[in-house]
Image 1 (cartoon, rainbow, N blue to C red):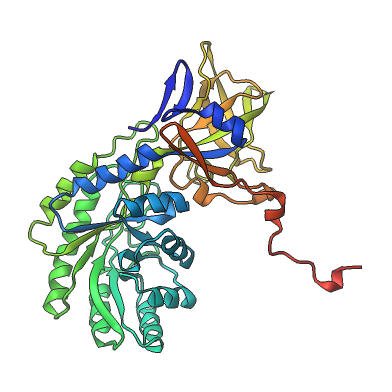
Image 2: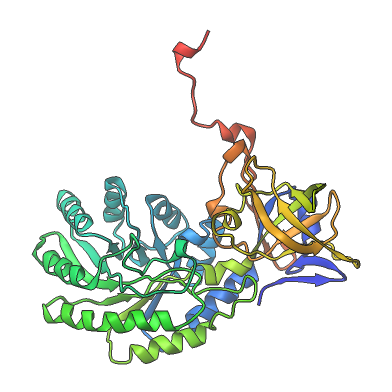
Length: 419
């Protein structure tokens, strides 16, 4: 459930008409519901009531400072995958000892930044990374808390681009190599083994893959303990899906119940890294219809938002419902909803039945709170959209729309080109 509803055929976010925000902010813009964000986080966290756990919101889904601050205030930890996300997390007020650093390609400066900040742990993705973290910790005269990310070779039954737990994926290492990694870690002077990590993918709509991954991890946990490593944390990652179209993902209570049953004999603190399941349906992208065009057997609705604003349809052929901000009676049309980018792959929807909208009408691209603005770009020198947060009957611009000056910020023309 979310707080985007129609009242007298006008779309509202909580108690604010979306049209009113568009009139004040312009289009395109991302719009988030405070009530939905809060309710989704608490519903997920409360589902694990009675279990020793730390919910670490996955920053990569949506890194806006206001959203990070909201989750921090609700007691969340943070899962990060870059130095930039660490900076944002600290800026939003997260305590470093509630931040987990995942990701397959950590740079030296990012490792140093995390060590100096004092994060909870690194999720290590390779033996070379383990050696580098040990080296950097030694130079900084500290010990690095680590978990090794295990690839359980479980098929999450999701899009191949967001599957991360198969042996062909770049993430983590297999069970045998993980044992070697834990043996190696015990010999490294500046490494402290604190946990074990697993993440199998994103937009997963069935509990079974998570349970399969857990079953493969339990034997590994026993082996790690037998070698004398006193691990404290089991990081299960994230990946729980949402409804974009006709998916039926499990409720967080069902997800938590299945995990609790599987872990009843495991005495470790559970770390969870939800992202999409919390923010995905808490945000929409609002765009304006620029033109209508009829081709040979094809209708086009051309909007001022494109693949630079919302990459998911182009990248994954992902489905996002598209609704008129002002709903009206009449027959629907079948059209491609496309953007202004000079690519044939620039679309928000293909062969979609939508309202028979006209130039100037507003469209709401639903379920755009996750991997929306976070994946946006300046391709074709398009300025990135504004971000707006609604709480009750008020709205707040939490990210200004970029300007043309922002496009060239940091660029310079060398002297030999002048004149």
